[in-house]
Length: 188
Image 1 (cartoon, rainbow, N blue to C red):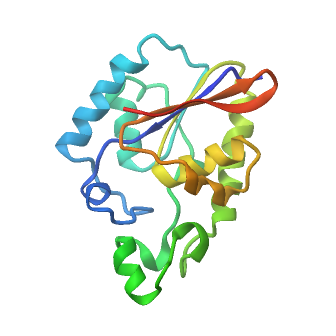
Image 2 (image 1 turned 180 degrees about the horizontal axis):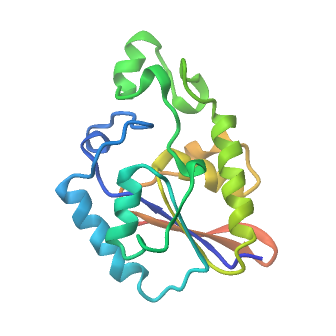
Image 3 (image 1 turned 120 degrees about the horizontal axis):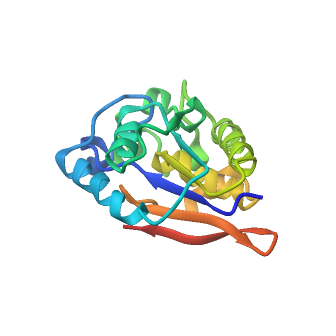
């Protein structure tokens, strides 16, 4: 059994700062985001990981590199952020002008992924982590990591909406005896 899974969200980007949905667009971190990523080095220094996984998108890969794990990170498409389709680059407020009350968690995205498709990818990440034989670090994105947390707990993927994640935050998934649990959440 995996001891724990450390979820590490990438540092700030221009779009995360402005609230724009950033799925497949491969934009870099801001200078502040890079500074945030460097601080992860100290916060993760005492931890040994059997496996380090990262999204292939530059903001996650660069966060892993700046945190000291770039050379050992295994890149996996399963950790890509949610494909927001036609809503890529738009804010929730902008989308709600056309679709009042819309939420990515319940309203769907035209030409993008469903929450269950994101959940299927995160379930594969969980299976891989559980087979690693030790602690695992996962460098990724806000919505996908929130879905991963919901799936870890045995909840429907859409329940990821209840877990807020800030840039360059660390969250730890583990167990309470044999029951999957959240050990720490959204620490910056």
